[in-house]
Image 1 (cartoon, one colour):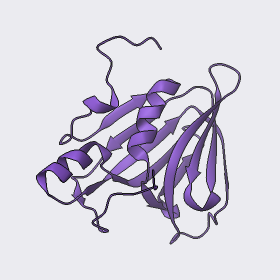
Image 2 (cartoon, rainbow, N blue to C red):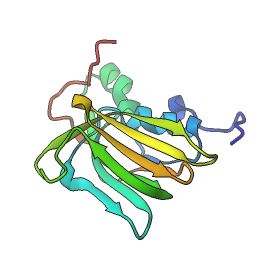
Image 3 (tube, rainbow, N blue to C red):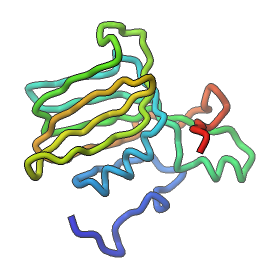
Amino acid sequence: MARDATDARFEDVPGDEPLRLLALDEEDLKVIAALAQDAVFPVSEIRWLARERRLAILLNRFRWEDKEAAEREGRPYERVRSLLVIDNVLHVASQGFDRSDDDLVLSLLDIEWEPGDPPGGRLVLVLAGDGAIAVDVEAIEVGLKDVTKPYVAPSGKAPDHGV
C-alpha cells in the first residue's frame, strides 16, 4: 500500500482518543504491534471464530501513545481494554502455553509478519515466556480498537525491556 504525507504515523496517534486502527500491510502492522506491545490477556479472552475466519483477543493494553504526556504531567500511566481482531484467517496454532488454562495470563511482546504466497502469510503473536500464536492469513487485515475508557495501570509502572 503506497504511503503519502497524509498517512498516519505512530507519533500522530492522539493521546486522549480511543484507538481505531486497521493494518492492511506490513508497515501498518508495525504501528499496531508497537501499540499492542506489553498488552496482557487471559487465555479465556482468545476467540477463534473459524466460520468468520477471524481471531479476536480482548487485551489490557498499555497506552504507549499517552506515556510521555503522563510523565510530563506527573500523572499515572494508563491501560485500556482493546480488541485485537485478525481477519482472513486460514489456520491458528499455539505453542508454549496451555490453551485450556483459562486463568493463565499472557503478555504480548510483538506481532511479526512472515510473508508467504502474496498477499498471504503468517502473523506470529510473540508472547513472553517463549509462547506464540501463529495465524495463517490470506492477507493482512488486523484491527486494534479501544473498547473501554483508560484506567490507571495497576502496577503504576511503564513496561521496561531494559532498552
